[in-house]
Image 1 (tube, one colour):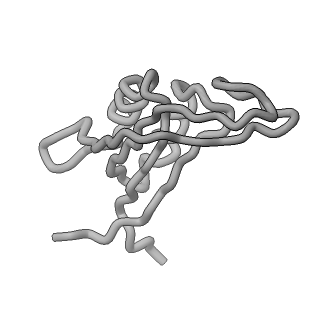
Image 2: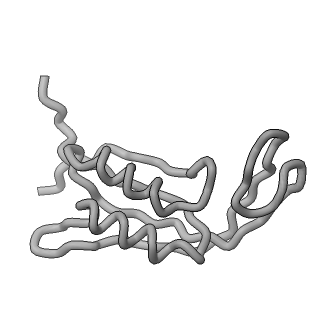
Image 3: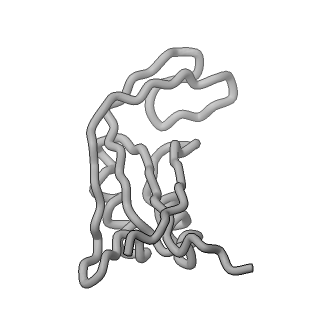
Length: 110
């Protein structure tokens, strides 16, 4: 059975310091294409919070201490067929040991 969702929305949270690198990686890997446009994305800034547990190797902060980081939420549409390539590209440039990311199936609007 063919998957009815040709596109997905990738949402990834990254420190502000790495937002441009993540957006560039998304676009180069094929995410963010809408019609005759490429590298399309949306970003919103906020504050991420986390508590690294014993054994964690956080890029920011240290195990056992609650941390707050100014982050960007980056959203981009992606063809499902390019998803694995895009995820590999994100992992190459993202600084976190565990990346906060969501992937949503998208209905075709038109």
